[in-house]
Length: 383
Image 1: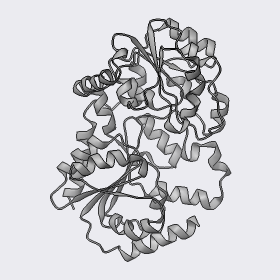
Image 2: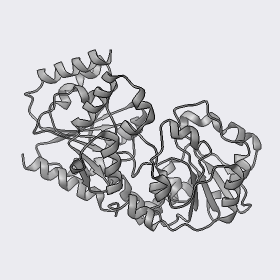
Image 3: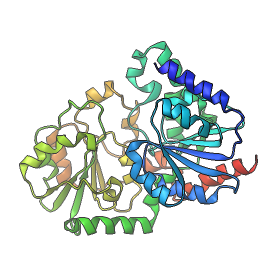
Image 4: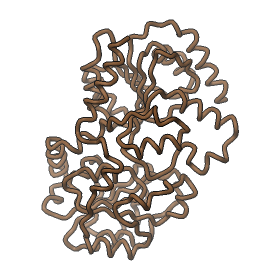
């Protein structure tokens, strides 16, 4: 079925190959580059129009972009996408993608059109692509299809040589495709104005967090929903009697909160309506595991300590996998047991993020948006 679908995309690509290339298309399934998209729209050369193709989970962000005057279209794989959106993609001079999109493997690739990946995280603890241990179990046709998508990208926007090497190994791409520009999404974490507004948003909704040590528990999303948070986690997180704990699980895994809710500890809070990025701006301590929020948190001036609670490391190593050298660059040693977590919470040891940021956030200096836009506006203006 996938082969037929990609063949249809290729057919419609050929039928639309001669369309005027007067559009820029941003393909979105993460909602954290809205400011970048708005600035890009404002600075495009006059003859170009920006379109955003968006997945259903980013509808709120798309609504914001539409109110700003940007043309938006929902999309999902299927015949409607082939009929309606392939022609749009084939009229683009520049396509920017924030993730792996299977449809790219079916598009006819033209030498004067640039396809760019702007990843949705500043760094990677988890493995993906060819490095994911489960990929080796896929069929030969699947593997060819994956590589075809990877090869369609002309450039990868990265914030460090370390992340560039992750793509080299994960996508089997050459390092000369890596553009060391920094991630636009990181700029807000280095903006005092954004930090101030984020704190205001949080304190307006959750004033009880003000003037307390805030411990944010934000583990990564897991595809396997049969996992359970370890027994005693809630009491360990709340071990510091002076602190308040905010639990922020992925919406798909929200039912895993139930055991902690049953504890009824008033020091453990659940704010589903608040954004994780905003909560990072008021957190003193981040407790996470394999999540990319660690790379964002380390940029903030309020980041005092971080704890990597990897209670299911053995399972996670086998699916989807962990970067082989992760122990060499984590800013602290991970913990694996609830009692170790309790001790770290009570110790509240300050963490120096300098080496960690030098490794992963090398080019995240608050000016990444300007550099990225300047590069691709120059590309559009030269053709």
